[in-house]
Image 1 (cartoon, rainbow, N blue to C red):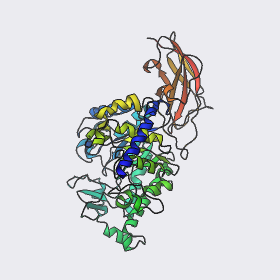
Image 2 (cartoon, rainbow, N blue to C red; image 1 turned 90 degrees about the vertical axis):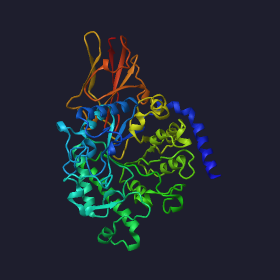
Image 3 (cartoon, rainbow, N blue to C red; image 1 turned 60 degrees about the vertical axis):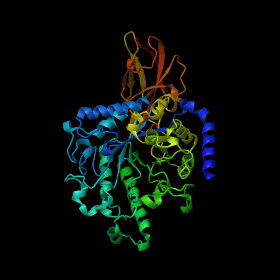
Length: 515
C-alpha cells in the first residue's frame, strides 16, 4: 500500500508539473552540471596512450557538446586514485592518461589547465573532482615511486581489492590539505569537489582494518565509539580543507556529492533522516556526516546522488528531493541524476523516456533546489531514450547563469566604460573599453550579449534574450551566428564575474552584419 501511495503521489506531482516543462526559458539561474570521469577511462580519455592532439580533440568535443546544450558546470575528475590529471609536485601523473602511472604527457601538456581555459572561454565553471582516500582500483596496480602509497606505506590500508589512505592518521589529513592547497593555488578552478567515497562502502564479512590507528589516535574516544571516531576523522578533514581553500582563494567553492541517503528515518535523532529504507547510508556506512558540514558552513553546496526512480518502494526520488531540500541551511543543494540508469534501462522505470525529464522538473519546483548534475558524460553521448535531444529541445532550451553564493561573493563586476562598433560600411566589430578609473574587475569572467531590433532595451533578466557569451574585449559579431544579417539592430553588454554576478547593462550600440 505504501509503495502504491508513493507512486500515485509521484505521478500526480508529475502530471501537475508537465505544463511548466516547456517554460525553461524563464529560468535565469540554475546549476547545470555534468560529471566527467577519468577513472578507468570511463569518459575521458577514451583509452590510455592517446596522443596529446587526440586527447585535446576528445576534450574539446566534450566541452563543445555541453556548451551547445547550455550546461554551465563541468565536474572533472582530476585525482581519481592518488594520482593526477594536472601537474603536481606530490601526485604522480595518472595511469589512465598514459598507461603508466607517473609518465608525463608529451609536449608539456597539462589537461586540467587546458580544460580550465576552454571552460572559461565558454562561461562554464570547472569543478575539480578529487577522491581523497582511494589509492588504487585493484591490488595489481603498479605505483609510481612518487606515489604516496610507496612514499608512506604506513598510511595505507587494504580493504577488499583496493588500497586506501587511512583517514584516522593525522599526517594523512595534513597530506590531503597540502594536495588540495597546491591545486587551488596553481589553477584557476572554480570549486573543489568530493563525491561519496570517504570510508569505503562496506564489504560483507570484512572489517575495515583501522584498529591500529584507532588505538594510536583515538583522541579520547572510547572503545565502543569507533563509528563516532571515524565520523570525526572525516569531519576534521572537511573542516580543515574548507579553511585551506578559503585561506588561499576565498571565492573558490567547496562542494560534496554524497550518497543519496544520509540516514533512514528510524535512525534519526536531532535531525530526522529521510523516510527511506536504504541498505547503506552516509552516516552509518561511509561515516560522512554531510548534514553537519552543511549546517556548519564547511561546504558551499551539496549534490546528493538521488539515483532512484520516482516511486521506488525503499528510496523514492520525490521523498529524497524534498528531504535534501530541507537540509540546505542557507547553502546550495542540487540534485545528482542517474543518467547511467537511463542508458542501462534495466527496470521498467528506467525504460520510460520521461523518467529523467520528470525528475529534473520535480527538482525545479522545489524552491530549495537550485539545479541538477548528471552522471555521466559518456551516457549523455549515447543519447538514451532521446534524452540528449530533450535536453536541447525542452530542458535546457536557453542559457542559464549559475546561482550566486552571497556568502562568497555578492559584489557585481565593474561595467565597461563604453562599448562601440567598428566597420567602414558594416558595423560588425564590437570593442569594449575600460579606463583607469573604471577598470575591469579582477574576477571578471566575460560578457553576455543582448540584442534588440530597436533602441528599446530587452529584458535583461530573461535568459531567452541572451544571444552570446564572450570573454575578450573584442568581438567579431559575424561569428555569433544568431544575429540578423543585413539588418540594422542594437546590442547591449552585461559583464559577469566568475560567480556569475551581473553588472549593469551597457549600450546600446548599432550593428549591421553582412550576409
